[in-house]
Image (tube, rainbow, N blue to C red; front, top):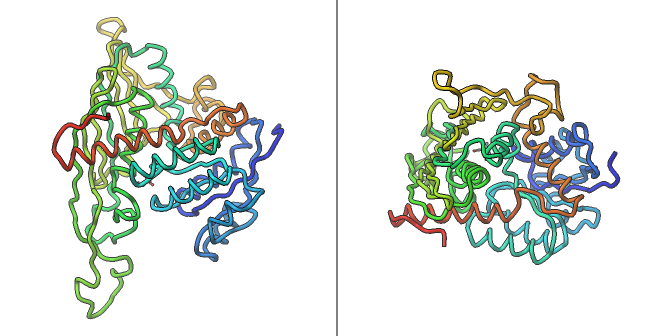
Length: 385
Ligand code: SOE
């Protein structure tokens, strides 16, 4: 039974706002935590839209200015689920107000923003977390346990792809994610950040990268321009795409492993194909988010003639997180990775520890993002000094 309650102010109510709202609502129903959650305020600029979200997701009240959330003395946790161009300003103000700060990935749109955010939470000595939710999939957490337990031996390869196809249509409009001033980057910082975080989490830190960022479609219809605007000239209804559509890079890890990373929104047919494979001296594992409850495992020490990739269904009670929900074989989904992350964060806060992952991870991920962007510009290997 929760001994105390923390009140949350959520800033943002679209896709991530919905996923985070569900996590706050459900976490106490599946985990016995020392901290309960009060869903106090959800914030968005459009009052009618955010009120509808509050009614649907179960928030007590709304705000249309994030500053009022931070100024509310009853708010303990500020959760930033807005587009990347507002993360830094909100996070720094929240930290300076003594709030716990949770933020969507990537934490900043630039390395400088990420550093300023990390400095702010460190100076304020407040807890912080970043929503790299895929670490909290049971199969990924099992992979982490197996690697830590030596089951794979010396790691040679980390091979990751994160593939989507939602903008492969040239008529898809110029939304904020395709504009550098709002998103910071395209696939690179959005889904590339996830596989960078998984590589760091599962294999370790990287010390050198070389990569390229590419934009396939360089001009798109402005949002709303795809309506029938008779007489509008092309220049009036088209705008420049200022971010990458695909990002690929090689990495050397500090422990000697090699990494290959590919993120694309043009992998036609792949919808949310976040897959990694890790090869070590004693065995290999492979994870595919589109088959989230499974982990492929090859034990290199199985007897000759009886070797092969086996499929572990990660739904046993003794698997990470799985036992919190249903009996073996009753699978869980994408939304549960957010519930698991919130459960871990609240438990860490109660122990007086930093949640994991946190702004240190957010900053270290941003260092890799930045190094790859510089490598793409210079066509040279870039060391992560
Ligand atoms: C869009 O690429 C997106 O919503 C990402 O922003 C999320 O982080 C990812 O989990 C799903 O796809």
